[in-house]
Length: 146
Image (tube, rainbow, N blue to C red; front, side):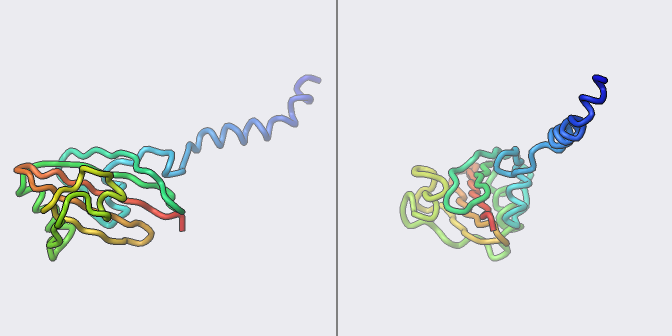
């Protein structure tokens, strides 16, 4: 008798277990590594250790992340050459230009840094390459919900 009383609950229990097993596929709530974030923007991952941080969402964005890495200038220049065949010629004429601060905040981009912007499918990106002996690279990538 007890088993028959529990039988109608079986589909609910199975459904709950399936949902739990599938996990969360929402990119906004799942952790993304640097390679995944950069790939969304059509950029390759560097042969360097990189960190990924969440960035504020705006408008209809599905997710927004910032990848940061640094290394010897020749390694950074090789990464730039791989991803931007014509190089990044655009140089910031002042600190905290709007294109960079919108995604990276104040104080990240300095006068003379190389800056590139682009769109790959539904992902938009901003790249800032610092001027240090071991340049710091910030890549802000956002994907719209479209």
